[in-house]
Image 1 (cartoon, rainbow over the protein chains, first blue to last red):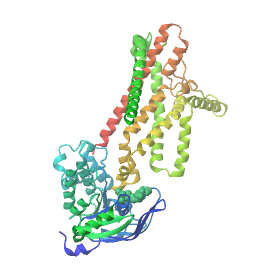
Image 2: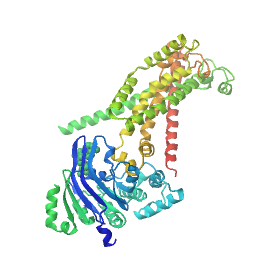
Image 3: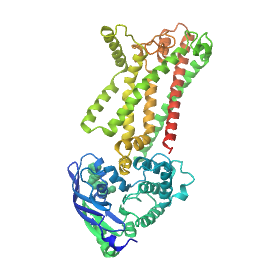
Amino acid sequence: MEPALTQQKPFCIIKNLQVLFHGKPVLQDINLTLTDSRIIVLVGASGSGKTTFLRSLNRLNECYPGYSASGQVELALSGTMENIYQAGLQITELRRQVGMVFQSPNVLPVSIAQNINLPLKLVTNLDKKKREERLVEVLQEVHLWDEVKDRLKTRASHLSGGQQQRLCLARVLALQPKILLLDEPTASLDFKASGRIEELLLELQHRYRIIAVSHSLGQARRIAGKILVMKEGRIEHLLNKTQFENSEMLQQLLEEVL
Amino acid sequence: MRKRFDLLIYSWAWISTFAVFLTVSCLLWFLLSRGLPTIGKELFFGDASAWEAISGQVRVWDALWPACVGTLSLVFLAALMAVPLGVASGIYLACFATTPFKRILSLSVELLAGTPSIVMGLFGFALILFLRNTFFPDANTSLLLAASCLALLILPYLIFTTQAALESLSDEYRLIGPSLGLSQLQTVFHTLLPASGRGILGGVILSLGRAAEDTAVIMLTGVIANAGLPHGLLGKFEALPFRIFYLAAEYQNPAELNSAYSTALVLLCLTGILYGSALALHKTLEWQWNQH
Ligand SMILES: Nc1ncnc2c1ncn2[C@@H]1O[C@H](COP(=O)(O)OP(=O)(O)O)[C@@H](O)[C@H]1O
Ligand SMILES: [Mg+2]
């Protein structure tokens, strides 16, 4: 557990964020200050802008045509708060520090080891020995090491869905991000594999700031320290643990989401 | 009603597949039965001994060897020119071009793809006429000219398949590179290209096959019936498809017609070998991508 003092310090401040695609607003009037050291879970109907919200935190929306945005997003990356939309910001460095895992496991069509090694080699200037150490570290961190240590050279696509997703997480962790964005990380997994990822996230929340989108309220309740409810591109509610553990509030939440 | 419709579609799909299989089998059987008996050392090297022919000590008459070498050199040269250019253009169109520019480029590639091969041949021929009347009075149709025209012919296949292979990757997959902090160039070379390797390879094979079998282009740009082994880039040459055409059109006795069939068989095998080596190349590349 982190000391109470740092818990009060915000790591993300969003002011009047608006995101448009081809002139159509997708996110509107987002004003938010996030201080939590526990997992923040985003819920909302499909199309409500959850993915777009996550991508506005590592500026991934810019990879799409027709994107425009206004407002300000400040993240605590190197100690101080930094506006990530300021001119001259190193965007590749930002994306390294704000790691993202996607909905479906997206391993590269190479070996298990190379999935982690390749981004490390391209993005950091670690030497081969350091990279190999890091590889072992992160595979252990996501509890994949014992399962794959004998077949690091085999294709990553031969792993099961849950293993692939943990590998994707390891790939991101290897770059030592400050913030983790997870976009429905268990949506394509079965019950058991989802459970393992949830456990893993509960462990990781002590080391990284985590913002996750969830497709299931049950999951949100299990892992969240705070729940954000999105509707039509706006943040409708911000619920803390006592609020969403109260079943009446949850009922209301359900109605909002559907 | 619904069920019957499904059954109809199912049968149709099955019959179509079977028809393709049947056609290919008949074709093969026909070629094999007519061509196989004449396949032998005689067919390839005529009266010369194999070693003398392969090392080029003795000139081979009325046999396949010079045509095999000619076709291989043609395909190799054409691929050397077209593959880097085509794959690079495909990458540019799929990953870098902006929308208005992309439209113009795609249109011109489509135009190129729609150009009949005989027109490519005519273009090469006209080029030589132009060169003769202007800077190079000695210019003549040659291996280099034919290969260049063939390269032009297969360029659009390469561009299309590369572009399609890259664009068929899912949106999420395309974002992996950027999300890990890779630059655009790194994303293309280290995440997108490895994932679309198979598709691009398919395009390369298709275009090599196309270059190996085309007759119209080379007929106007330097192939002749009895050139012997190609004499350098600026010499005349023989080629398998032209030999098939020539033998089938002007055969004097049934034996010559049969040797046309066996030539066709050899061309088929040659394309098969090209396919095999392209596949092997792909395997090596994949292996390399897996190294630390
Ligand atoms: N790259 C894009 N281009 C155009 N429209 C987009 C793009 N991304 C998202 N949208 C639109 O924004 C809305 C929200 O999408 P998204 O953020 O993916 O929602 P969610 O993740 O909550 O399902 C949708 O209506 C979608 O069509
Ligand atoms: Mg989404």
